[in-house]
Amino acid sequence: IPGAPPPAQTPRLRLAQMRDLIKRFAATEHVTRQPDLLRLMPHPIDRYADPAKEQVDGAIFVFAHGTNPEAMILIEAQGSSPEKATWRFAVARMTVAPFEVTFDRREVCTVPYHPEGNNRPSSSYFTVGGVPGK
Image (cartoon, rainbow, N blue to C red; front, side, top):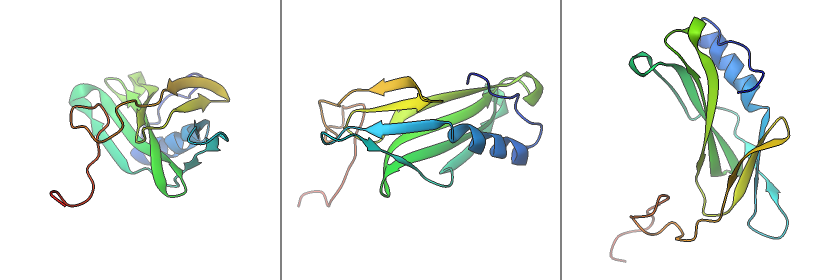
């Protein structure tokens, strides 16, 4: 993540850093003619670490339309130790709609419309709803 400070030594301080970093991101979805600025949900939905894979710390943040999650941004401190780690991010879709993500108002990711929709198990984005057979 450009310009990010080095990861802090403690999990509590790293969470504060991740919360500061996520505020520099924005996500916009295109469902109608008018783009919708997605809302950052106030708390990460997961927090994780895997020192064996050089993941010092990480959190998953969600951007939503109302309360409907549309995009996730994962922020991770990656390295063999907090002193050697750097902050990185990844974007994941939770919608078939196209959207883009910006960091400090610069576009960093564009996700196109998902032409297969979300109803095919072979699709890269798949959801299940309802009761099977009904």
